[in-house]
Image (cartoon, rainbow, N blue to C red; front, side, top):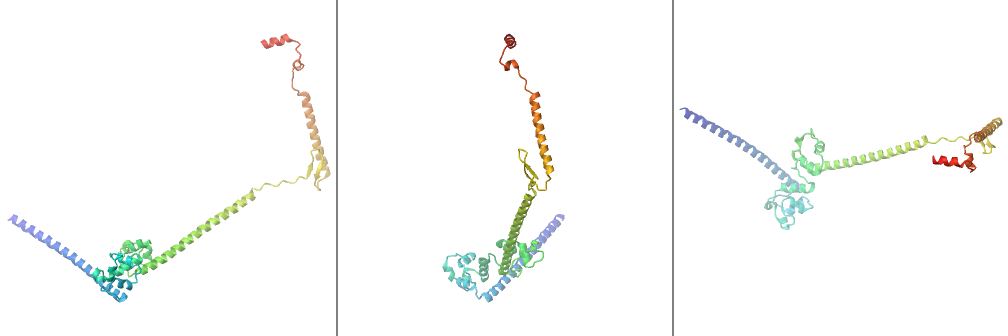
Length: 289
């Protein structure tokens, strides 16, 4: 009896898990189907806008669509559509035969012109334009531009067109160019100002290190003791006293030289000086010792 009850409980658990799994899967399937329905409805609505705006359907040929979209580089546009660029036979085929929707043709046209489409996210747009994604979010007026939650939003979800983003990019490049020019001018002015200040300082240093001017002598005397020139304001008694002082000084020097020659003569050997040897044996003995 106990074994039977255990089996019944196990069967109930299995049935409950099976029903729960089925409910979860059915719920996910409904969500996916709803999302697919929404995306399909958006695509259909966008195709209606394309028909009213550009005036072509999926029955139009590839060349007609290119003329309606004003595409200049058709080969490049065809490559974005996944077609052979140089195959001219494809130009006469309709979009329906080629498996291309009008919306896909428009997206390829946007990609060939801008490098991104209205379905591209902000992160993809920033990478294509080589522009900070934060700057794009600031220009389009999003709150909290530092938040990464906006990076996965498409241009279509933000009610933006590729032309709007291209306009923002042009303004950004103009501001960047002006900013770079201003930085260059400021740098050049700084360098020239520094050079000017340095030259002024060096010029002032030359004035500071200027040698002192030699004072002109009030009186010039020749080596012979005669006055060659004298100032008009100089007293003649001063000149006479100066000449007398110089004369007495020279005379004292001369007397000192004579005294030095008299008392400080170099000692000499008179016998050797006269080259006479009166005691030759004594000289010989001294040399031998």
